[in-house]
Length: 468
Image 1 (spheres, rainbow, N blue to C red):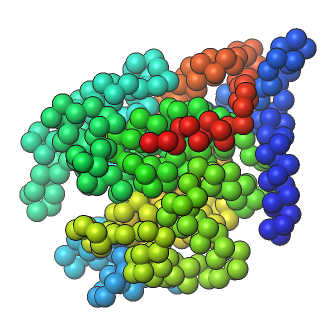
Image 2 (spheres, one colour):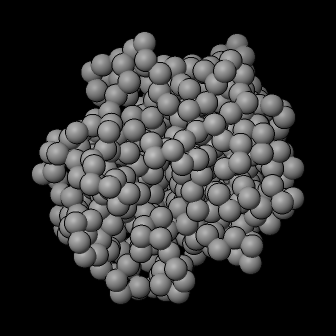
């Protein structure tokens, strides 16, 4: 579809969001109730399949992305020459910490699957999202408190002092990186969120951490980005501020809009509409907004994605455009864990993947930097759009359902073994509480949610939610 036609569609759909087709329709309510509120209808059974699709596709993308994680980060040397499309299914190259050894997950850059009967392992792209869902269910709430987040982190996330995990070199491992690690250390000292992302205490709050731990809150508030942002506000600000927080909020909005987009459109049009809506949470003068506009305009010019990725590196990591200053303090590996460069890289995968699950994951895996994170983000979102049945149809195969949260975290029931069906069912129960909190209704007979639309445009509420 042409860009002009897409914009026209986006304009009218922003006005008619409550009437979108697919799983969202106008609710059939008594006349007196319709005169007071407008509702959208979301099928609960279909949504459980969406949540299973989220977990499954996120795991596929996460583990496939780990093959190339930190292989290519720009700059001189063997890690500077980025991968291209032709590198798919060629030998994997060592990462910056690989000590000359390629990934042990796959000798080639290729899919990493867990077939039926197997068990997916948790990783940093899935485990803290799992923790937040567990805490929401445990406390029977929609809004976690600072104490609940702190206690949950300290109970389920190991420190270097008590972790049972070790690297192949025999060093302790607790699967926390940069800002997450600093936030955890601060919690152990008695600091509560959002104080754990106070730049005076945590110098890493512009890193990628919040982008890979909070997208799930968008799925807990289908069609209501305003409430999704409210739910995600404190979890995001547990580890992120400013640009890093705005990037995380962008993902939350996109995930919430999975249930609001017109499903009669092509996957390409759906993802672009969602992205253009989510763009509004990025402050005009922020470098993440500049990155979005740079990638979007490059995509519209139909440049090859490899050229756009190389230009992204040159513009922001080398030239430090739009205030993207990663040299003002020491940063490991030239800022390759930074929120900005990974956000920009993720957008290239999103736009050039054009809503195709496999293509989007492949591009994210080949993109460079912390490649498993954008891959998992878009894998999870597209998996939610397709549902588990759609994900398996896309690959024409069945996958494992079991999930082991104790690969990276601890103190969960059943020795950490769970399955996507149970995880999705918990997500549905959380949405039940969100719908009630919003003044909506659960129609048990028809197994649907009736979700009120926002009294004001949700953008006004986004402006409030994004204020630090």
